[in-house]
Amino acid sequence: LIMPLLKDDSKFKYFFLRSFARWLMVFLFWGRVKVIGRENVPADGKLIIYANHKSKFDPGFVTQAIHRPHGYAVKSDLKEYPITKQIVESMRSFYIFREDNRETLKSLLYGIKMAEQGFAYVIFPEGGTMYRDQDKITEVRPGSFKIAERAQTDILPVSIIGSNFRKRKRC
Image 1 (tube, one colour):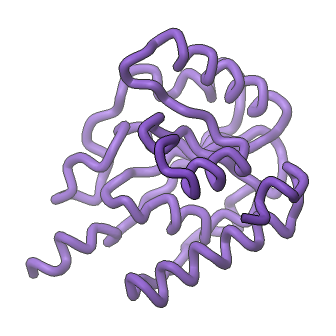
Image 2 (image 1 turned 60 degrees about the vertical axis):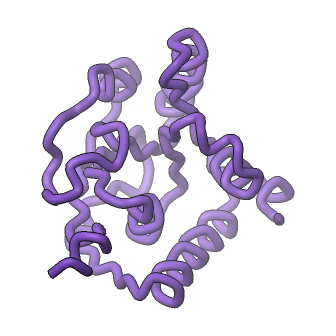
Image 3 (image 1 turned 90 degrees about the vertical axis):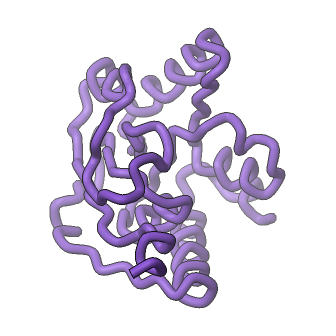
């Protein structure tokens, strides 16, 4: 892929990622994104975005909606897939190691350092795609707000509604 060749703060990189996410959603999954309140997303500055997580496609929806460079707090299992790993790491995301608190701490310190420098992160505080029958956040993992607290960032709550394709197919 082209991602490792582009600078970390390349606007083209994030434009490409947004376009790729949109293509995936529209042509493969027939999903459309309607963003309400995009004007409330700061163009720069310290920011952590907290969103509900009901489907595997939620990062694609958020990537389409947020028009500034951002990364994710990603479960470490995604390192096993070469393309996903390359995309995740090119976005300056950090990993959450559910089985290894020491590795998670190292990763969180990287995320805090980047957030202090003004890089935005998206965190799904539920820690996975649980409680798919509801669009609202139901249970938050302990420590999910530590990055925003330690880096003293602004917090942007985001609600993703209707991303659970499995739920819609049953209706």
